[in-house]
Length: 535
Image (cartoon, rainbow, N blue to C red; front, side):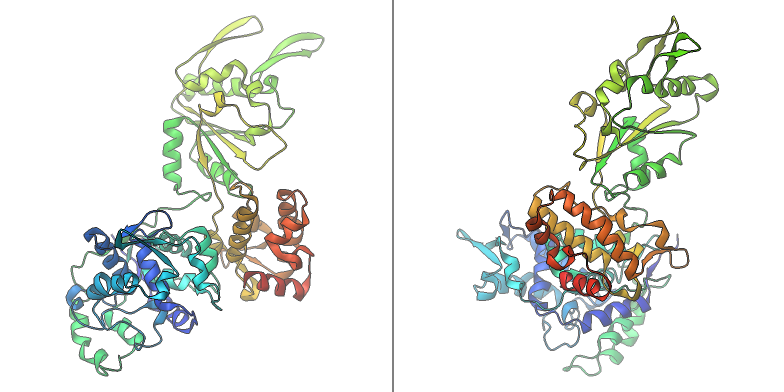
C-alpha cells in the first residue's frame, strides 16, 4: 500500500512560521506540552518519578522535537530541538533527548524555581508529584503573539506515514489530542491563521533535509556535512513509524467517521443526532441516507400530528374513511416481499418540534424492535412491526427553547449522538479574502466566551453557519468569504443568534463579543474590530 508523507515544501512553510514566531515563552510552553501528554492536569497529581510517566515524557519530547528518523542518533548531542525556539541552537538543551526528557525536565519543574511555582502545585507529601494551578494561564497572560497552530501540527507529523492525504483539520485534532489541549488553551495559545498549503509526497523527508533547515550548531560548524552519508544510510531504516489513519473523517463535530455512524445505525436501528444549530446534523443524516435504497424525509413541527404520522379518519367525498400516515405507509412498503432485501430509512428532521409522544402514540412500543401492534384501518385489522430493514434517524436542535423536551420513554429507545461545533474543519474549508483573519479563530473565541458567560454547552455556534453555498469556490474547494459578505453574515446571522442566547442582555452580549462588534460595524471598522477581538 502506498504511504504518504508531509512534503518538503509544507514542512519548510511550517519551519519558517515557527522560526519567525516571536512567542515569549518557548521553553516553558515546550515543557508544558510534554507534561500534558504525560497526564499533567488541574485535577490529579502526576508523579514524575514513575517509569511509565518518564516513558511518556520521552515519547512526547521525541515526537515534538526529535530531528532524525533513525534511533542511530539517540545518544548523540544536538539530536532534538525545541520547535518554539528553532531560530538558533543557543537557547536549546545541550543534553540528548533521553537525558533531557527523563532527568533535566523533571529537575527543572520540581527544583523549586519561581517560574514553575507559578504554573504547578507540588504535593506536600511527594516533591515529584505536581498538578497545574487553577490560574496557571496567568503566567502566560502578557504574551504578545500566539502560536501558529497549523505550523506546529504539521511539524508534529514530519516523520509520520499517512495511509492517504489528510486535511489540515485532522492534523490539528491529532495535535490537540496528543497533548490533551483543552478548550480554553486552544483559544489562549493558538491561532489558525495564516493557511499553509498542505501537500504530500510518497517520499519521507530526510534527516539531512531537517538538518539543512535548522543549520549547524555553533559548537559544531560541520554538523550537516559530516553526517550526510549517515543520514542517507539511515533514511530507509526499520524504525517503526506511526501511521496516521486518514479515514477517520470527523463529521458533524463528533469523533465518528461515516462508516462508524452507519454501523451504529445498523445495530441500534434508530438514532437521534443532537446538538446546537449549525453542527451538521442534517448533513450527516443526508450523507448516511446515500447508503440506503429508499429514503423518506419528513420534518416535525408543532402542528404535526398522530394523524399525519400513524393515520386517522378523514372526510372524503362525504364519507368518513381511514387514511394511513407516513410511518404506516413506509412500514408497509418495507415489508413487501419485493423489498425485503432493500434498506429503508426514515429521516425525521427537528424531531423535538412536535409533541413526539402524541405523534408516535402506541407505536412507541414498536421501537423496541421485538414488539408488534394490531391496528385497524377501514375495518381491516393488521399486525404491524418495525421491520429489520427500516432504520430511523432523527435530528434535534438542543438550543430550541420554543418546544419541549422528548420524554424519557421515547428517548431511551434511541441512541443519541451529540454533534458539537467542529472548529478545526473551518481551517480546511473557509477563508477570508486576503487572509484578513481566521474564521476558525473567531468561532473558537466566540464559543469560549459564550460558554464562560452562559455556562451552557448548548448555547454555542456551529461551524456550518460559515459554510454557505453562495461563497463556495469549486476551484479552491473552499468557502471563500469577501469582507462584505462576511460582515453581513456576522451582523445579521451571528449577532442575532448571540443576542437570542443572551435574551437581549447588552452586558452579556458585550462580554461575549465586545462593544465594537456589538455595534454592527461595517467596512474597515468591522475588519479592525474583528482583529482587535482576536488579539
